[in-house]
Structures are given as C-alpha cells and as structure tokens.
Amino acid sequence: MVTIKDLPKEEYLLKGHAACAGCGPSIALRLLFKALGNKVIMVVPACCTTVIQGPYPLTCFAVPLQNMLFEATGATASGIVAALRIKGLEDITVVGWAGDGGTVDIGIQALSGAAERGTNFIYICYDNEAYGNTGLQRSGATPYGAWTTTTPKGKKERKKDMPFIMAAHRIPYVATACPSYPIDLINKLRKAREIKGTKYIHILTPCPTGWRYDTSKTIEIGRLAVQTGVWALYEIENGRFKLNPPSDRLVDKTKRKPVKEYLSMQERFRHLTDADIEKIQKWVDEDWEFYRTLTTLERCI
Amino acid sequence: MKIPKTLKEMPLTPLSLPTIGSMGKTGTWRTFRPIIDYSKCTKCTLCWIYCPDAAITRRDDDSPEIDYEYCKGCGICANECPVKAIAMKREEE
Image (cartoon, rainbow over the protein chains, first blue to last red):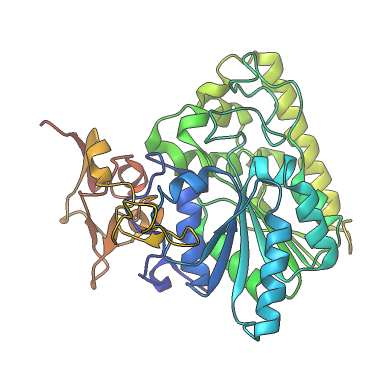
C-alpha cells in the first residue's frame, strides 16, 4: 500500500506558477506528477491550467505539454498516441487534462470519438463546476442552485453525470476522485496507467475564487463533498461498479453528513432556501440508492 | 532563459521552457505568512502533499520547509495540520 511518505520528492509543477492562492486543480496536478512521474505528454485545452502554465516564453510545467483548442483534447491525444506508436515510444503515458467546460460541454465530441476509437490514453477532467479562468460562467457541470456570473439567481438545472456518460462508451476504466484523498487519487492514476485503452478520471477540485470560500478551506470542502455524499468516490472497471473508501462506508444514509454542511460553507449557495437544500438532499439520497443497486450488478452499464 | 526582443529572435514554433517562478516571485501575493513550530511538528508530510504551490519542500528527515519567495499564503497547510503546528501571521507583524 502506498503512503504519502513513499511519494517522490521531485516536483514537475514548478513553484511560482500563476494559479490563485488555494487552487484545487494545482493540488490535483501535483498529485498527477507524483503518481505518474515525468514520463508523460500532456494535452491541455483552454482551461485554468493554460493560465497556470504562465506567460510565454516561460512555463511552470517540467513535462512536455501541448496546448490545444477547447474542443480538440481527445483528437490531439489520439494523434500523439499514434505518433508515439510509430516511433516505438510506448512507455510514455499521454494525459488529456481538461476542465469541466472543456469536457462536459465543448470537448465532449472529441473525447467521445477518442473513447470510441479506444485511444490508449488517460483523460482527466478536473471539475471546478464552472468556466473558471474566463470569469466564472456556468457550465454543464455546475450543480443545481449554484451562483455563477451567468446564473445570478442560482442555476436551475442539475449537473451532468459525466463519468456515467463515459462508462456508456464501454471503456475499460472510469473513476472519480478528489485531491482531499490523495492516496486514492494516486492509486487510481497508477491503475489507469497500467490499463490499455481509454481511461477517464473525473476529479472534483474545489475552487476558492469561484465557490467563494476562504482559500485555506480547499481540502476541507473537498472532504465535506465526499462525507456528505455530494461527490462519491467510485471506479467502474470493465463495467463493474465499485465504491472506494471512504465512500463505501456511506451507502447507509445515517453515515452521511447532511448536505447543508457542505452547502453552507460556500457563498455560491448562500441564497438557497430550506426547500432548495431539501431538494438537493433528496437527489443525493436518490443517487446513493442508485449506487447501492449498482454495486450488486455484474455490469452497471 | 533569454526573452526574445525582436521578431528575428523569435523561434519558428512558440515553445515555453520550464522555469521556477514563471509568474515572478508569487510570495508577494501573500497577506498571511505560515510559520511552522518545529517542536510540535510530527513530520506527517500532509502540508507538503496538500500545498498547491509546491512551496513546501520535504527535507531528508521528512520535516517541512516553506519557501517564502513563492508561498502565496493560502493557509491550506495551517488548516490541514493535524497537530496545529502551523500558525498564520499577518505579514506586517
């Protein structure tokens, strides 16, 4: 079993980068390099990470990285994988790293195509539940009720369930993670690297600028998202659904904290009424009943 | 690296090179300064793994060291320290 002290000391995300203080995605990026080392080629579309990289001609990434258009992460990764195969460099992992807007809205066609072709790469969606670097507009991954600059009274629609959309492509590995549980995230990344085919990992990365909370609470909010059941840690391996710790202990409703604890810590949910919170709680409970059924099935999708 | 000044000096393909401090000395963004009390530290390395800025390095004996040139002062380390060995102090104090 991996512990935090076993992780390498080398940093491939160099300090002095342009992320906001308390940035959740940069924690996830550091964990990505702790898990995979520097034998990776990254493909990054327009997203917060493009800003984190820094202004030309400097960058904070000590690994090869290709910037690409918003909608083309999957297609670019397919091209790089094909080039590596012809050059015989198959020990290099290609990682698509895109935000939630670049995955669930704009990039979904290229990603769906790459998954259908079975391109051998890891696609990671780091989800801060809005278009962060352009000034916080709503995305398909913004949850119900959340304030963004384009939903001033709170979003009226529910969040898209992207991991299950990807599982429906019958790819070998789909997982969800959160940087508040670093060992879980690192195990999933290392497992994904060993599997051949398209792997999809969806990481919930709290964002102090967009979610409106104190910068020191990033890890705490991620942990609360898992403990309240708003975000479940699971993996779908060859169609088989499995909850991972600590989510596997939360199937029973009494073990989960009320969602109000998670919502009240963020100012983006400040305007929610008790009826709204009850509605969200009901949806979360319904999701967990669904997960309970899925764990008993041989193939969940 | 040398920053190109004229069009002739520009490379054929735009390529950025890895640099520490690509955004300058980000420590100047800081309002609160994390200060480690090493007598309380249990060397659990949690502050090191949770630092978004890679501004905490792990010494050979696993004790943390903060690089104040680049620490943005977000306070995650102080919030997550299980023994509360990190205090956040206002910069001017």
